[in-house]
Amino acid sequence: MRISDDRYSRDRLRIDAAMWFLQHEARTRTIRQWTGLTDDRIRKLYHSYLRGGGRTTRHRGKSPRQAAFFMRTARMRDEASALASLCCLVGLFDGPRRQPELRPTAGVDRAASLRQAYEGYRATVHAPSIGLEHAVLLVHALTRGNELRLGDCRDCGALLVVDALALRPALCSLCATDRTGTSGPPRPSSPGTWGSVSAAAS
Ligand SMILES: [Zn+2]
Image (cartoon, rainbow, N blue to C red; front, side):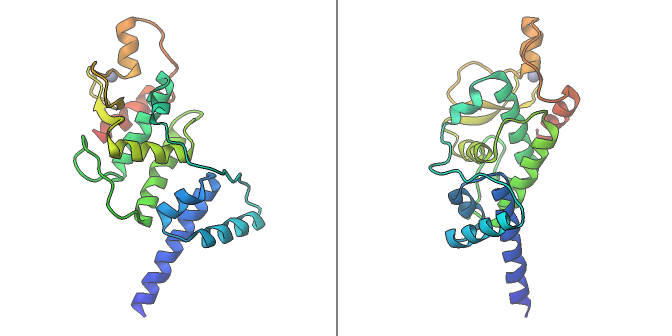
């Protein structure tokens, strides 16, 4: 009896997670990886979601793969750092902070952590521009560590997503602005919120 209860609640968690991925227009492959559901079940969930009045766009083809996406602009570097800080806070990464590791089995527990981090990011950052598929890409890129890694701002110690091959020490956009005396790029959220997220993840 206990086992079937556990199975039921586990299945419920998978379905809840899959519906959340669908709302954020994730691809089937991504949903399968994070929930363990079959393509057939994901398709059925998608149709029931639409019948229930849900709106979404099905994206075809491969998920985004270019980790350089997160380094393109100061604003994107800021947003990636905020999201990565939240991923650390919710325990999405195992291992020491400098060498994040994904748990070997992709499980629905990890999907719940991703959801917490991603929703926190969307609530914290003004006009967030990282979609869920790119959030997943960021998590994988930080885990691989060959293109992106977690680092610290040299001046204030805030947690940053940095280019794994960069030779110069990293600066957050606030410290970079202080050094150049320019107005710098617009901050995605108030410095107070930002600072507390970064500091808490340190
Ligand atoms: Zn700084």
